Length: 403
Length: 175
Image (cartoon, rainbow over all chains, first blue to last red; front, side, top):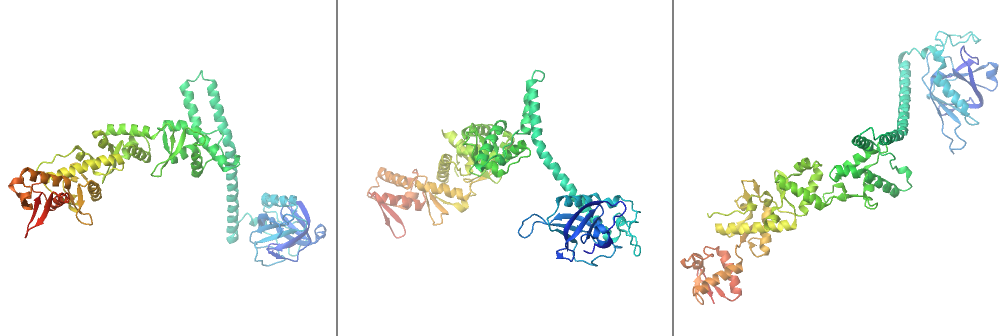
């Protein structure tokens, strides 16, 4: 409230009338004031408040410079939430020195409210917002005194320094104002950044469509490019993106979603699994799937749930949990017997194997190498050697030598 | 000490880890039991203390740097006990008697010897059986006293002999 000034209702140089509204009450912060049922005039520079009819007559009224306002918000609906917002909250910067006398010398609040009896006129609200962001007072030349020549107040016509002050920043007030401005700038840049991200999300689908397009074009031009190149390029594209990722919101229930997801996982992982020796730890699968999905990422839990359904959709692979608790995705053709046989061949070749050496030879993770050796042992094709050097496996001579 | 013929398993590192695979484990235990019996026979020992034996060459192969753990030794001896080829001496199962022949076999062996040498219905001391010139060629020559007594007791149960106490000596009468 202490930011208001008493002034006769005249426009300054360069100031323009914007909007008016009736039946407006002013609150000092949360407190009611005596200024009720007045008329509000919005100009490019100020908000004027006067008793009905005072402003057009040019009588003394209350004036609030818009440069005090750094934030505007609509107060959410009343106690019962009915009838939409009725009040605009104006957050104000600190009072500047050289201010004309106003209705209050000090105020505990740093905001005022304008209460509109008939609800907020959205055009008024918008105009106010625009006026605050337009900062018309900064564009006017600093030398131009805000005290209009048209203003007839001569006695206490000391020049207001307000518009100049918004440029030159003196003392603590200046620092505070600059901090406020920084806040505003940060806020804006965050908004812009998020806008970009949303746009990127929107574009992602287009990008995938483009990559699909390219691959079809390449297929058409097979004469020019060798078969190998086409295949390779297509495989790049494939590993780059699933063109229509299954997302949760396209399904009504979780179980349907998981089924869809399972189908997609099985489609994309077949080739990958074949490359990797038929078995892959679930953590690796998760990475591959999410890499292919690009932006519509899935959680590890979703993946696990989807993998549990792989059997139900007759996928060529299944989720497998080893006795040690490690989860893997395994091609159905990749049976234990098969693993055990190849592993025991490797054992024969190398004499003995530790999980680490096997992981290097077979190009799988140590965890999987361990599981392979255990599987081989379970089938009696290997035997273990636990020593201070660690766990190693040998061909099962116990059974072989005697048989 | 007589030369022990180590089986091939002795130089096979997994031999020193009890295998979890049932079938493999059975083969492994079998090999161990044979080896232990062989070793005890060759060294003419009948008792085995688990706490001490870990360092004996039987359970420790320095050339491949492998040692059989105490638990593993216990596992093997307990398995031997099932077939009557070993028996714990104390309750904590630290000291074991190992029979490279079962007590039954020992008893029969002694009885056969007695029959062949016309000892039926006569008495001989246990000292004679263990140390006597007559038994020098027999396998039970020098057999651990406790084992010998146990063997004779199984024989006694069959009614083939009777153990008897002298002043400070024990004897046996064959029927």
